[in-house]
Image (cartoon, rainbow, N blue to C red):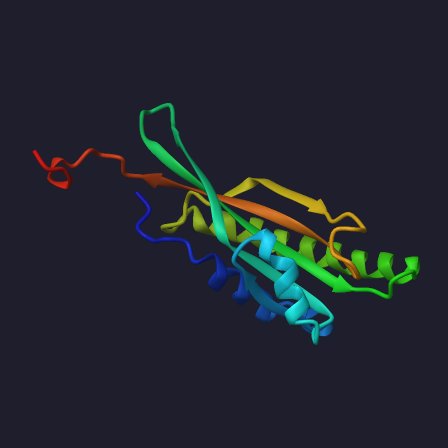
Length: 167
């Protein structure tokens, strides 16, 4: 059984600190409490043109696997966003292309690391199903980019401990 809670922020920031494209385009890393709060957070940090946002409220579901054990499938959501000149389609597409490439590089490293995690405590790191989507042009005014989600199914102890209950 895995012993370590996965530190998604620590992991992704360690990747970003080493990524040349992230540094070259001066992305600003931040967290948002939820996707709904992200617009306010981006407005408050409008001094930065480019953002890499981690939504720090993870979504999860708990499922019973074939062997009878339970797993909590945690989902971690990230956004790569770049400010573009509104009305300039060429600029918007160029910025979206950069976000696509940054995402490709990060996901390539996540897949590579997922194979390494199989030998460590994070052997459940799921690299076979990574959901991504590009933002619509109207979602965040003046920003283009995409979001992606990766999953980490971890064993979940649902043993009914009688000492948790009063008689």
